[in-house]
Structure formats: C-alpha cells, structure tokens
Image (tube, rainbow over all chains, first blue to last red; front, side, top):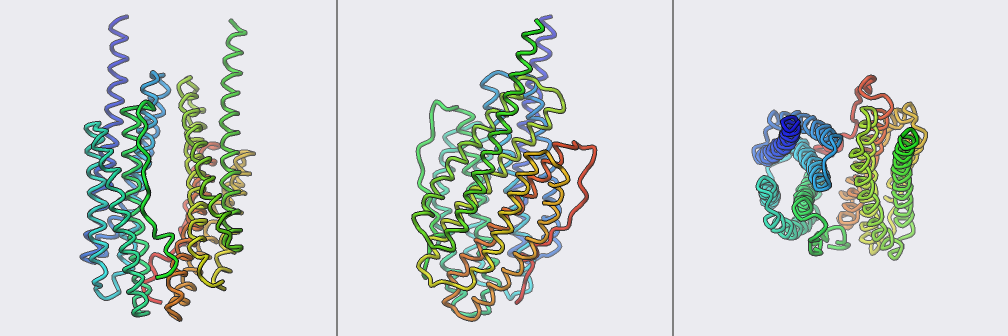
Length: 236
Length: 236
C-alpha cells in the first residue's frame, strides 16, 4: 500500500515536471521565433519569414498539449497549493503562445516591407525588438529558477519598453508627415512596434503569474504605472 | 449513501451552471462595453470613455473567478466529457476578457480622437464595429443554447469582417496620403479598426471552442481561409 502511494506521488511529480518542461520548451521556441523575426526584418529574407510563420503552429500545438496536461493534473486531485501552480502554468502557456503569434505577425509584416526601400526607420524598431526579446529571456529564466524577485524586475522594466515604444510611435508619425511615400511602410512599422510593445506586456503577465505561483495571494505585487501613452497622443 | 451521492452530483451540477452563468455575464458585459465604446466614438464623450476604461476591471475580475471555479470543478474529478466542457469554459472566458480589453482600448483611443475635428473616416469604423458587435452577440447566443451550427455560421462570417477591415485599412491610408493633418487621427483609426478585427477573431475562437465543446474531436471543423490581408499590403 505504501509503495503504491509512493508510486502515485512520484508519477504526479513526473507529470508536473513534464508540464514545466513543456512550458520551458514553448518559451524557448517563442523567443527563437521572435529573434528570427527580428533578424528577418533586418535581412529582408522572405523565405525565412515564411518559415517563421509556419513554425507558429508548433507553438500552438504545444499550448494545446499544456492545457490538456494541466487539466489531467487537476483531475488527479492535487492539493490547494497545486491549484495555484497549474493555474499559473495554464496562463503562462497562453502568454507564451501569444508571443509566438506576435513573432509570426512581425515576420508577415516584414514580407510586406520587403518591396519598400531600406528604411532608416528600422533602427528604432530593432532597439525595441532587442528589449522585448531580453524581457522574454529574463522572465523565462526567472520561471526556470522560480525566482519571483527576478520576475518583479522584469515587470518593472516594462515601463522602459513602453517609453521606447511611445517615442518610436511619435518618430514614425513624423516620417509619415514628411513624405507621403513613407505612409504605407511606416504604418507597417507602427503595427510591428505595437506587436513588440504587446510582447513586453506578455512578459509582464508571465512575471505576475510567476509571482502568484511563488507567493500566492499572501504577497500581492505593488501597483504599477502603465507608461505607454501612445494611445493618448492627439496631435503631433 | 444514495442521498449523499445525489447531493454531491447536484452540487456539481450547480457549480457547472454557476460557471455557465458567469460566462454569460462576462459575455454580456463585454458586448455592452463594446457597444458603449462604439457609441462613445460617435458622440466623443470623454467621461463615458473613462467609465468604459474603468469597467474593464470588472470583466477581468470575473475571468479570475471563472478560472478559479473551473479549477475547483476539475479538482472534484469529473469524467472525460466534462474535461472538455471545463477546458472550453476556460478558453471562452479568456476570449471574452480580451474583447473587454479591446473595448476599453477603443474608448481610450476615442479620447485621443476627441481633439481632432469630426472625421468622415469614422463611418467605415462604425460599420466595422457593428459587424464585430453582431458577431459577439451571435456567438454568445450560440453558447447559451449550445448551438454548434450557429457557432459555425459566426465563424464563416469572420471572413466578411476581415474583408471590411482590409478595405477600411486601405481607405484610411489614402486619407493619410491626401493630407498630412489626417495622419495622427487616422493612425488611431487604424489601430481601432485593428481592435475590431481582433474582436472578430475572438468571436471565431469562441465559436471554435463551442464546436469542440459540443462535438469533441469527433467532428473537426472544416479548414478556413483567413482573409485579412492588410499585413501584406506593400504599396498603395
């Protein structure tokens, strides 16, 4: 009897570590997709862009697996602390999946940019992209080591990304005003910048879910100011 | 013993219907938010916009409740068919929550538009908004009556919304090219149009999850072409 109980517990732990492993794999894939998308924007490689777009399905499939595994774990009747872990896993997987979507969208828009002449405006996008990728790498590392304080630092740094996004948004508007030929390509760049800003939001969500996983409702996160004010720019 | 079992089963059903009720409430709230946001864009009422932005927290709180309830239901060890119901509930709640986010975002951008002169360009946005709201109302009605065929029709109609979005996207680009003073307000309209197109995607996700809830993996949905091609417009 004692042996059997041990066996059940062990297998439950196995499934938990499998879940954790799947999430790490999803995370690594979405960051790789993002980095490939940023590279494609620089190099204007349509074939590489198509590969990124096709790869997104693998991330989606993995999220599907994660949610099935989470529900199976839940069905085995874990204790209250585990409820927190599996809820966090479910949410983190969903955020990672969205990052993958945005990476694919960046690749798609880079194909659209391809016919336009090389633009100096891409510089700002590159910096924003590097910051977004760093945020994702940092929050996934924090998840790996269950480091809530590192997650909290990622969350704090999102304000920087928001500021940089707003600055780029304003800069792109001025290019559009200078020359109507810039309007179509810069519109794509605006949406690409928005995608990167949203990736930052998902890194923040992951950080918050990691905090919740580690501390529960006992230590709520401090309130945070959202500094993306591009949606309130009314005149430039 | 028989009585006690009955009691447990009844209470489980109660919790299921509570979950269903919560989702309907969330859905009604998000549609109301969307309709209020569309109204605010017409009337340019900043106070109403602020209320919409503040209301979004209630939808977020409700989603939090839904995911807690879903996990509690799962912890009670339902059978395999129920796993599908609770997974669908979790995903549908998350899609509804996102629709609420987009409604709040529309309200935020309408505040930014407020200082700009009344624009004829708003007409196209209104039509797109009405279509998006109709898609949400229809899919929530389908969820209420568990009507997978109605859900499938909502999913089919998303292509129409995508076409309308792409047409509006192109139209807005021409306004921007005609007069640089249109660039800033039309950029907001572009993002608002994108929000409405995304709301349509979430209505489609809800329809797909409803189909999965009703039919399981036995009757997969037919493949569907995505017709939003605004991200591949390279020259206008």
